[in-house]
Amino acid sequence: MDIPLRTYATMQDRPAPLCYSRTWENGVSSIGDARDAVADLLGRARPAPDRRSVQDAQLVVSELVTNAAKHAPGPCALRLELLPGSTALRVCVTDTSGKPLRQRPPDPRRVGGHGLRLVSKLAAALEVTRLARGKRVTATVPLTGATAL
Image (cartoon, rainbow, N blue to C red):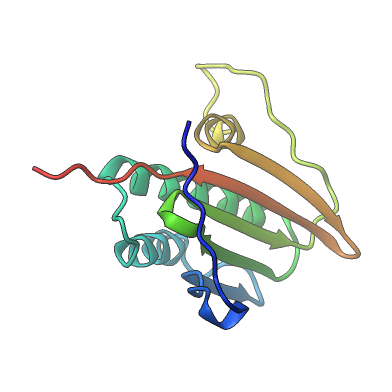
């Protein structure tokens, strides 16, 4: 497998990653805003990700932000970072809950409680970092480039 290498003379020569961040002080005003932020950020990616990748990333963001809004008592934050070459989207959601994530066993008769299982299937990596006040959940969602017609 050939791995392309890029060399930059200085850190200033390195292209800045495409990022988005937002903090909600009293819960999330709209999960739709978080999904829209993903679509907007990925719309500027080059190469452009395919539609399915954008939808997968939107679903991951929606689930993680919804969990933060539902289970954490205070402010939460969202950070999106497009990795070099538009190969993946790193999604970080920070909340004030110290409770660990809990993936519930599958139950097709249960309404709700399936989000973390979906995130685990769609993300190439899922990591939880404990913070002094709360936690940060980071999911890395792989992106597949759009094919030319």
